Image (cartoon, rainbow, N blue to C red; front, side, top):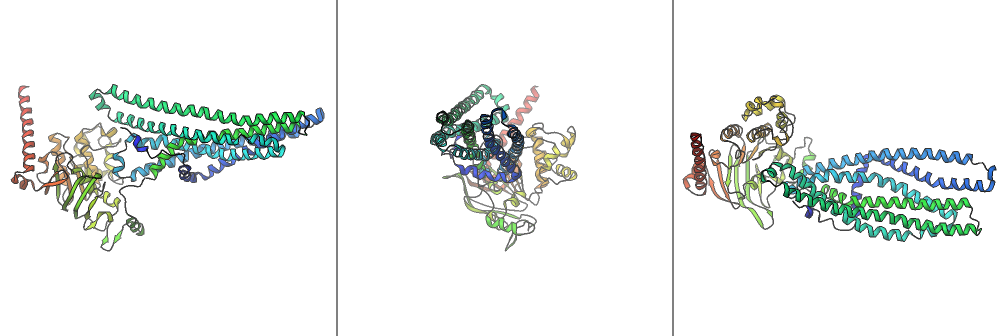
Length: 623
């Protein structure tokens, strides 16, 4: 899947505001940041003093020969180097702390943001693309920030010290050194554009490559079944080649930029050496020690310029990562509580929002009614998938949704769960518009069973407990018994401690459904949503699951998307959905009596099932 369109917003020039938004992550490491700054400052001050000491030693030797006393200057020189080593140790250690702390907080906040975002955000973003934000992008930022801080303090102080010292020693020569500054600025601006473009393209391709890699791992069985190894390899090779091309271009630009900056800085020092040497030979009053000290300061002037240029290059290379991370952190969830709801929840000691009609978040022990009023919904503007939908469901009732794929069944249950919200119309819970209730409260009262349930790596016990983390072993086993899962779990090796594998692949589809059902039951939800929960299991397992479902739907509101119509005969309301509209409504018996669309679907499916059953019996007879 191409992901380049996801990053199209990042096309402009380098924007320092992106990095300013990330500086807040340095607050958690104030002490380490201070140590980086202090260590860099110590090094800068010492490096600015050393040329002065060298110049004094040379002038002392030149003026007094063997009678000169160099020991005090030598001792001071060695002592300064001891402090220099201490400063290096301080900033390297502190920089590591800053990088680790910033990376930790960035990954934590990015993951927290992903938990907040609505389903629509994940509809267009592959898992690999999102993984890249939490791994390589966060790592790139955290690895860049501490060294930028160091060089800002060290480079700025050293640059300032070198310039002041050169003007003190010989102002005219200092001007020769500084004449190259405009060339440095122009060069940096030009390479900024080139390096930022190549960096963005490299990160874009890296995101697409990570997404492709992740999808191929998840779909390994499908790849083998369809014999697509060579085509997948060719696609990955194409992305890898693009990545290599942009990374190589960026590396070449960096390799040209830094030597060019160094050459321009050295040109200023060379001009100063030429003019200063001539002045010394002409006896202008400049001593050998002063000339050597000046040349060392001229070299020092070029050194922080080079280092700052390197950090600037690092910032440019990391800017695309920073833009992506900031974009994620600043994404506003499409579905979220209103300011009024958040204020009401925050204003109550228990975190339960209140309205004039009583508590809207837990005041009623059960949800007694769900009402759709003229609900219309679309994913893409101008392409509605649900038209003027109306429905009232009361406690203890089960609503079955049937119809062709793409008719709007999953959209209805997604709206109930508030994974999406109506574009027009409204949904009421006990007479209160559900946008006026907290999202957390609503979704805490949902039990969702999907067609292909997802289990997490770990034990059966841990997967069921995921429904309620404070549940005891007894409560977990009771939930498993209610859905007829306890017997098969007990028969597993180590029972409830059985490791289910990644995605639950060590269990059959039916077993995964039973574990997911027990997990949902453990939450004691007020609304149950089952999305074709028995369509992928055999008949015997279906009966087992169906028995568990019927036991837990009493006194609850349930929405069932049915693939096998035989499983919904007892539903209180059956809706036949076609093209986002309700074409038939009634009970199983009523709809069959009408001999309409439902009758057609049911009889065709029943005939197909009988044919399969007869075919199986005939095959068994032949064998």
